[in-house]
Length: 451
Image 1: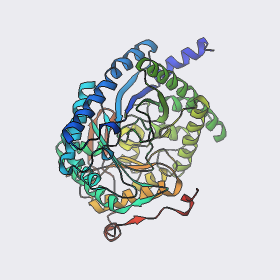
Image 2: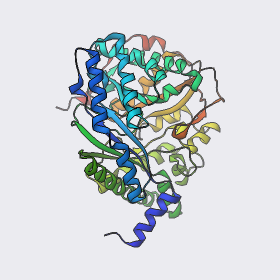
Image 3: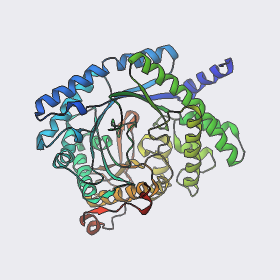
């Protein structure tokens, strides 16, 4: 039963500690929109999105007013377009325009699913889709793209990895006049989850139903405040405090998810309890790690502190809801986290340290600004390294990097809003070209044979 202190605590979390529902994301299956005629297929895609999501934004706003809980984003994810596009060649780009039109009509800020799942091989249609990504992201504002190039069961598709390095590079070039913003809407995954509500990597997986509501909750400010209040206690006590705080945050997310599900007449999927930071002061994952005892995020001990945080968040979430899914843990997107931005600026946080941290956090190398002269092969090698961490450890890893055209180490990019901005980070320029150009399939590890 709720009491006055619980209510006051929640109000404080919202007003002073940046607690919010980061997103209500409606997942929509487009499998029934496949057609041999691209005109009919695009028309079906547009009609179905608009039919299913017509009340999404309005419902989110109504729930926000009812409970006084900020709901920052209302979003849509769809079946990976690579699964329904067939072999339309260069015409596949028309799906991006259709998704953009539907997203604008529905009033959502992002729509994810311009996606290909190519962990074991690529069809002609999926190759065409990957080639079209730079143009798609340069010509749209709301469309997000992702490509799954590896899994613990299938291994890593090195041919796709090579293509994606080129894709990231070209996307940066085509959006150079907008601080290379296209790359902020492109994620390369290993072990991509089917029910992730967070952009830019959200898509509606093939194992999902026709339509579902997934909610993403975020509260790094709340967790930091709880750790600060604990003072000088043991790390065991810190883990317990984080777990209990995550429990409270997840309960709020479940409340909103159930309400949205009932109002929209759409099944409730999952609550994703991911500590997704923002550039706002007091809303930083890095500051949680520093509150745990690190002078600056990136110091030795950062990976251990992040492992404690990620584990405690997951445990608290699972206690609070039987439908915790997506990614659920701690995100470390550099440009979106005030503490990480400062750590990168002062040199405490390096690309190599971030890679080590991804072995224990929820995603991977996220929103990292690279020098503009970083080659496509180096980007591919960064993707391959990160995918290997995910493949071997049976976890989701991802890469979202931005080669800043015309900029070098020490310069900065600025995207504004939740995407933030940050410094260009140092990259190892020693060539991986021969390795990347071999192509083929990196075999799955032996422990993938679990049948």
